[in-house]
Length: 245
Image (cartoon, rainbow, N blue to C red; front, top):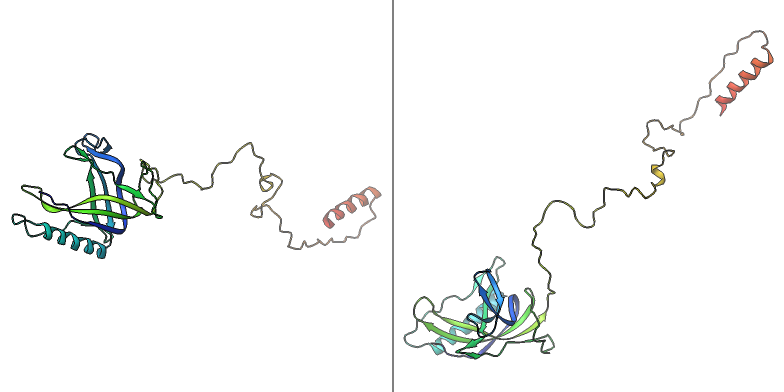
């Protein structure tokens, strides 16, 4: 048995896995949710959301009050904790709305932007976006494994901060090429820079001469001997001229 209750707004929640643009159902063969007609079995609009502890406590108190107000004598007294806690200390709740109840189509949840303008019918909300979520609370009790609780039915969403959709990559992180790294290869059609020309001598070349070191001019030992013929004088003069360069 279920009983409809008043609405409640969750503010500044982080959207997770929103499927609001149309109804979806879980396909066990594909292992994922797929779009479907509102009247198909399991067709729902749904949204998970993350909120801090303080907001989760407020929502839980409202759910407890709604349950207590509609509880019948045959219903269990205790309302179990409806949220899960993630590694960041935030609490995850879930709101959904069936595409149809007893064959009657439900009103598709509306989506609005921060200026309260209605978004297109095919607008796709993204995970990570900040939203306000309008819910209605429906206390219930079903005998068997279903148990009792308060269903959060999705009524409307206001998108406060939208996170752009990014195409997911099927790959992981590997060692190797990274965009922006310098290439170790040189285009052979490109002329070599001046520093690589053969005539240019690197400072690290062990054969390079140290121009800063003074060149000591050799001293010639004068030996007295008979005057040399003119041809020998010219050869000696040429040798001395070479040391002076």
